[in-house]
Length: 204
Image (cartoon, rainbow, N blue to C red; front, side):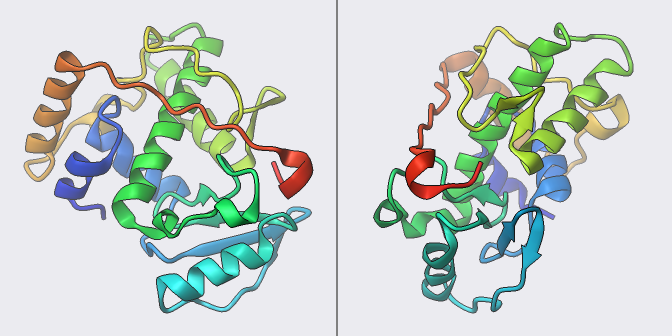
């Protein structure tokens, strides 16, 4: 389980801690050095790295030839880079990986929520979250490449995309949620627009 302090310090403040935890549990990994490589939808077995250097060597070996996911959020390693030389070790830093991953997932949630018309009924929010997780895993939502798509904007509500029982914070995360709500009110957090030359490095 993600540490509340790590979520407070590193996660996109537009997401409640409960959403961050559910996202990482559903689509990420407990191992910050986790590398997943797929080609043609098939998993490629790679050595389990024991250090950031070993992990980055694997990432550099396969980016451009296969779909490579990295770290706690299983962030797509090719997003935001134009060349393998642009890959940076901070992909494997817990805080930076969580930051990049939650910023991107928040955008994908907004894409899904906008498509559903900002649903407020009981089933709508859950469907938005589930579809956003599926889009994170596949890279697409309704035929659109979500990692490259434009952010629909902060006016699309994503603060309540889990059922009430899942969205309730326990005592461990209450302080983190309070901090998040304060940040949301006090500052505008810009979303990262990431571009990639797919013709050069391949993958979705």
